[in-house]
Length: 308
Image 1 (cartoon, one colour):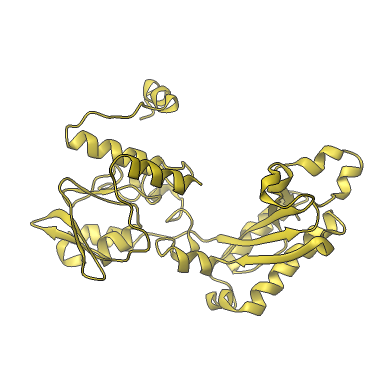
Image 2 (tube, one colour):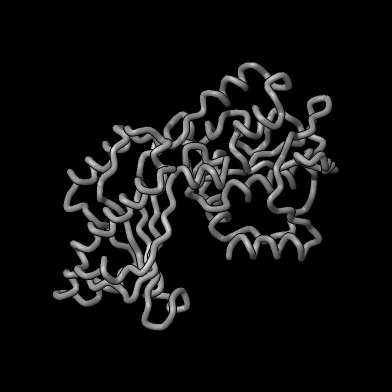
């Protein structure tokens, strides 16, 4: 729904959104971004700016090319690290909502927004994190049943459920294992069986499932390399002024007229739409335009505190 509403805003303001298009290159002339060329040969010229919300590797190495970039900048792009985990999701169509055993003492437990399954203490959580590094899978995950709170998401009396598990992209059996139908279905059954221990009878309520793996995320969204949902690992050398590097963290780039606004830029993927908002501010400032939007209160307060 968010994507649909953003599309409406674009069209209502005279913009054009072209979906299912593949970019061949970003056109650069004398160090300045002049537009983009699609794989079918269509050229879209840019009068004012080009904005990329893709990862750095695609934006600079694939669509611009090393020959047009400073050597040190290229090395910075190549040193970018991807997240060590991604998501394994099991979407469930269910005959009825689950009934958790713990609800016997507190019925409101059946109305919780999110459940953490398989973690009984800090040691379990640590083992889960360590498993990512080893390429191992376990039966610890989050799950939710959105139709309990929004009945429109399932037919009357039925239930929509979601198991969402953080898993390594690089399995010890090899990342290609995620493409194996039997492997992914078996792991989905494993997670449902684990849920059944906490909410007996849930397994029998599952009518059908749709399974999504880290490989599916990468195949659908090429900027999420290795299923990296935030376009890159969070660590000190890839955060703040260094996200994605010191030349692009203010949403401008070494190429004049080319701006960056994706999750690989500051403030990262956890601040939804933050990168795009700040990129829009940079473009408006550089073009000497007057902002036509009202600054969100949270941004105004952050500015007063000197946080931005």
